[in-house]
Length: 348
Image 1 (cartoon, rainbow, N blue to C red):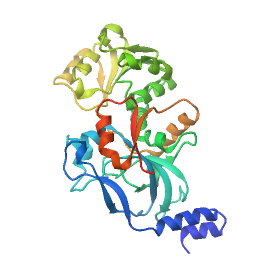
Image 2 (image 1 turned 180 degrees about the vertical axis):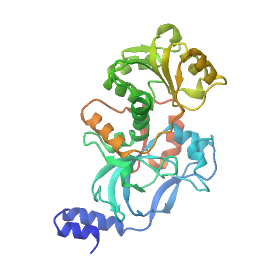
Image 3 (image 1 turned 45 degrees about the vertical axis):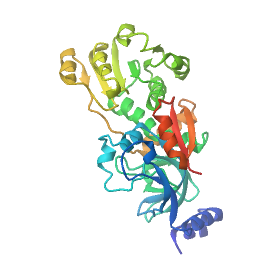
Image 4 (image 1 turned 135 degrees about the vertical axis):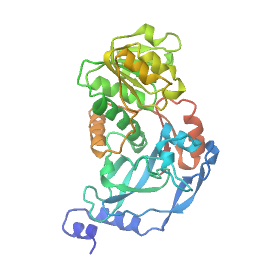
């Protein structure tokens, strides 16, 4: 008698969950996935059939309902030197680290979840997680229970972007209320979540974004919004405690100009990769601190915090567009145009 059957016999799990577990365990070993073998444009992403993974000890097997798309996916596919690319190894590769789905199997020693539980997670980063597929496996503690108030599409949009914002603002910046926080690229996937989290943490939030996003960002909690195309942000604000730069190499002068608005002892936190030459020396001369470039980590406890914020109505992820799994190439093309909020692949 296996662990699940024993649990059902003891009344710890309903029989329907046993049936779900057994039916998924006994299906064929193949699954649908999107792979690529060469780096390049979105056209390198090809739908195909690959072997289905099986859970190792302390892991869960999750049937994926939706997978989130992030800038990391786009840069890794294109061949830029990301930490994820360095961990890829030999191909073919399956992209994606954000998932939301249903537990259908468990490995030995796993006790947090049972078949039928709905979960979401950021998996394995920077190692490959294979989220653009019908099934994934990962340690159970890289997941959290999906917020009941949102669907799988929205849940899949949350993990990487939400944990990036949470870890940046709490673990690194250590906001405790009253700080003046400037968020660059506030209308993006991480940015619009960071605005809400910073506001929830008691900060005065200043956001830079194009004019068309201003009303939306104010509704999310931004106290001030600056159209960086019309007004240099350094002329519109100052006395900043924390700058969260989500622009990076796309506009490298943003980092240098941010030093002029930080108060002495303030913190520059650049999440997006890329800083101009001489930036560290310029920051030292300005008397401000520069945090090392962070890489978001899988964190089930952090996801639980995010889920609580969602359930409390303090955090909402904006879903820009949803594509079917086999249209991953089209989804990447769309995401590269600068979508508002998040783009997601619907797997089932």
